[in-house]
Every structure is written in C-alpha cells, then in structure tokens.
Amino acid sequence: MKETNTTYKMFETMKQHKAMVTYHGEFTFESINNILLYARRDIKMRNVQKRTSKKVYAVLVEALENILRHGVEKDCNIKTTDGVFILYKTDNGFTIKTGNLIKNKDIDKLKSDIKEVSEKNIEQLKEAYRHQLRNGSISNKGGAGIGLLDMAIKANKDLSFNLFETDANTSFFELTININQEEETLAA
Image 1 (cartoon, rainbow, N blue to C red):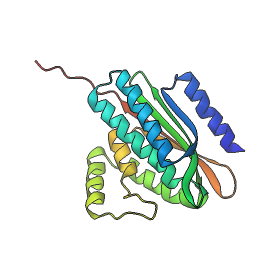
Image 2: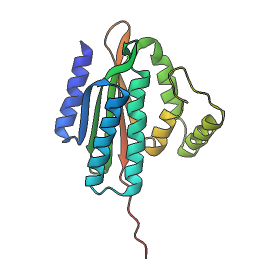
Image 3: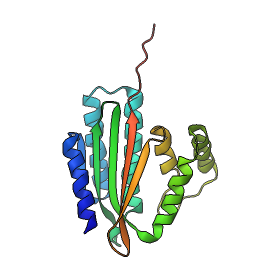
Image 4: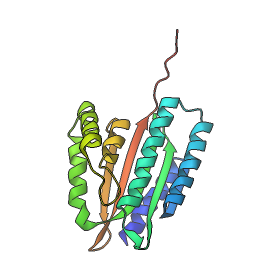
C-alpha cells in the first residue's frame, strides 16, 4: 500500500530532524487538543519569540483541524480520521508536516484551491481572507474556507504538498508548511 511508504518517509523526516511533537493515529477533537497542548508547551520551553510562537500555533490549529475535517472518515457515527503530524525546529524556524487520506473525488478542488493561493501575493491573500470572513458561509464540513488562506499568510506562502494514490477511491495528502523565525527587534 502506498500510504505506508509515504508514512514511512514522514517518520524518516521525523528522525532526521529530531521532531518536537509527533502523532500518528486517530484524529479526534480530543487528540488534536492534546497535540496542541504538547506543542505549545514545547514551543514555550524553547523561548521562541512571541510573534513566531503565535504563528506556529495558529498554523498548527488549522493544519490539524484540516486533517479531521477533510480526511476520510473512519466511522460515520464519530468524527474521526487517521493521519500523521510532525512538528520540528529548523535552522530558520519551524516545519509542520501533516498527512492523511482524502477522497480522490476531492483532489481537483484541493489542487484548484492550492493553485489559487499560490498565484496570489500576500496582500491579495489577506484581502481574500477578509472577503471570505465577511461574505463566506460555513461549509458542510464545518469550515469557512479560510484555513488554507490563513496558513499561507502566516507561512509567507512557504507551503507545499504531495499526493500519493493509495487505491481507486483515496489518496494520501501530505502538506508541508514552513514558518520562519521572526527576528527579534530590540527597543532602543
């Protein structure tokens, strides 16, 4: 199964970069809250500049919620999906990697959304974000359509993705988001 190979590659990344926080398994609201708790604690222990810390945390929230909202559900009675999450420190900041199964029928829309984000500059992304907040509606998956815009803004558009077909109905979606460490300014 191709998902196993991509999951293995993510675990290799985890070992290579000495990941701060990782998770592989069932994503629920409770597991996401626990991941966020551990991530916040680890970031705080590293004395990360406050602005960078807020950006990383906000992107974590969006990325983890996207796994739950857009992943292939395991059980129709309980909102749960399987996925992979890795947060690690880099020389320039932080990298967040997520992976989960998505339905193949959703790939064209996902690629279109990502292409639209990649073609906009930061100011255009901010305007699209504000427009969506003012005029958007909540989707049947519970989102307002601003998650990808928000992540792209906070990561200064430094995000990429891979898709690996797992079978005729699903593919493994891997998202990588890089957030640069803010330069601390010293007051004179």
